[in-house]
Image (tube, rainbow, N blue to C red; front, side):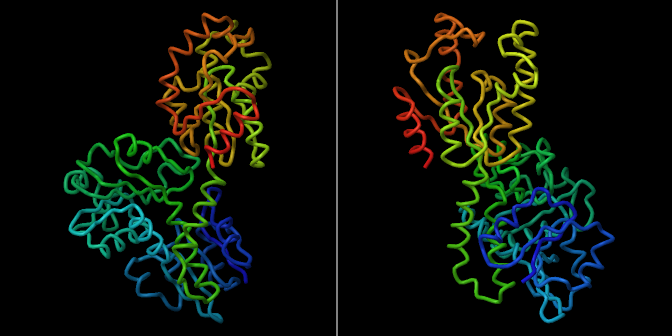
Length: 413
C-alpha cells in the first residue's frame, strides 16, 4: 500500500512515525505547493492519504464521495482510493472527541471558543456541538468565513468552558507566538491546543500556570491516525482507544526531552551521560556548548565579559536546543534564574532537579560563582527553592554515581 500525508509544510509532522507503528504499509510526508494539489490528487497515485493545513477544504472539490461526518464538519483529512474512486472522511472528529472526553470536559449546556477559521476549526465546532455545547464561537483576525474577530469573541464568549486553538500559532518553528489571551476568559475548564510540536506550547504553559487543565494535540493526532489507518486497510477500528493510548504513551516518551537542573557539582553531566547512553539518546550539555562556541572556558567568559553576557549566551543555547525532541539536556547551575529559560525548556521537556545534599557538593576553581566553600553555600541557599519550584520532578541523590543513576532511572520510569 502507498499512503502518506499531504500539506504545504510538514517539517513538524509526527505522522510518519505514528503510521509506522500502526501498519505494514508505505507512508510518506508529501509537501505540495497550492498549484500542485490538483495534479497530485487527480493522478490517484496513492491508496490512502491524510490531509493537513491548508488543504482540508480544498481537497473536497476533487473527491467522488464524502462521508456525512466530513461534509458536516466542512473538512476532509483522510482520502481513500477505492479502485480509482476517491472517498473523503474526517477522522479528526473522532480524534478530537477522544481527547476532549479524555480531558474530562463535559460540554453539555456550555460554551466553546475556537481560535481559527480553517478546516480544523470547523471540525472542532462539529465535535463541540455533538458533545452538547450550547454555543460555539469561532474567531479569527479577519472575522471572515463564519468567524468573528477576537475582540467580539472575548465579549460574547468570555464565559466559555473550553478554549480550542486550531491555528498554527505556537507551532515549531514559531514557538513564541500565542493564538489568544486566556486572561480575557472568565473561568475556562480546559484548553486544547491542536499543535503538538512543541509538546507544551506557550498557550498550554500559560493555561497550566493559571491552574487550567491543558492538553496538546498529540493524543488527537494519534487517535485520528488510528482511525485513518483502519480506513486505509479496510478494517474495523474496534480497539482504537487502546491502540491510541499505547502509541500516544510511546511517542510521548520518545519525543519528550529530559532536562536536568541543579547546583554546580551535583552530577548533572555524569548522570545525564549515563541516562543518555541507557536510552540511546543524544546528550546536550549547555555549558559545554557555550564554551565550545565561544572558544574559551566559562570562567574566562565571566572574567572577560561578565555574568550578564554569559547568561545571554546560555539563554540562546537553551532556546536553540529546547525546540528539539528526544534529548537529555544538562543545564548550567544558573539556567533556572531566567523565566525565559524555564519556559523554553518546558516546550518539549520534563524538568528534573538533581537534589544533591550541600555537604556532598564541592567548590571547584572552574566554577566562577562557587569556587570556594563560602560562595557555594550562599549559592545553595539562594537557589534551592528556585530549583524545587521550577522542577517537574525532584530526585534526591547522594553517594556513589551508580546509585544516583539507578535512582534517577527508577524515578523517570
